[in-house]
Length: 339
Image (tube, rainbow, N blue to C red):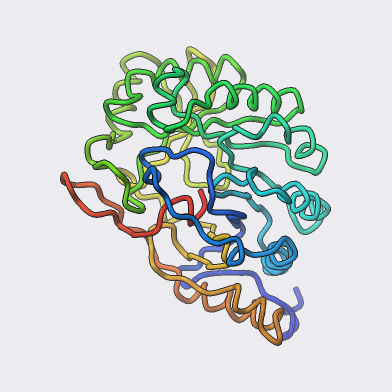
């Protein structure tokens, strides 16, 4: 095989020989919910002037595709509160089947009913929907907004548009732990996959995350007393590890940033809505892609910045929630980094 030209962009590979093929791109830090484990009620969001334009988001994405990224997940905050979001999806969707294998979306689904058909027409084939409870009062307590009817309407619209749905549920001690089996059964009954996630210690919130931290090792042990959990080799490109529930026939994923570090196979980086590339969700290592995009030679500067990101990407994160009152691992909130 011929060697690539010295001038041609080369695939993104970090110093631990992990190929980076997956970009999680935040298009906005704003959200229309205020989930208690994610942010405080009085969250301060960025001025719109600091957020990358649609053209910059597209150009940045093209730079990643040129370096071997084959999957892009658009996130927020809540991506669908950005007015030109579907225009970006249309622009990126033109590359599916060529430079891009898959374009997906993580959403809380409050705005999904009005956008599902357009997203499907633009090339999105599946969406991840954050949903922590099916109880309306409990939803309002966790999300601080009475939005469950809108979420369920969005899920129904996604299904009607032909989008595959995966439900993401944060496991919360004392809040939804008693409902997790019912959520799993409901999702599988709808034909959806569901993934349980341990709460992540990112950003200061109004309460103490220790009070609601529920190890998924404990959840799995509880589920195994109820159901037969079978190994499943499926991989979605993200950190989840999967199994099948024999009794429901559905697939269940677990994301365990605290009880089961999954960094050895990391294939992704995150870029915030302001163009800050974080080489690790749980690290402080970052590169300013916005400065590169707005410089005199944006294409050259972007590729140099991506090379720098590969040089600083850490081997693993060091999340922990080990005692009451412990500070978060990082000051930045998940809504800023992108889910």
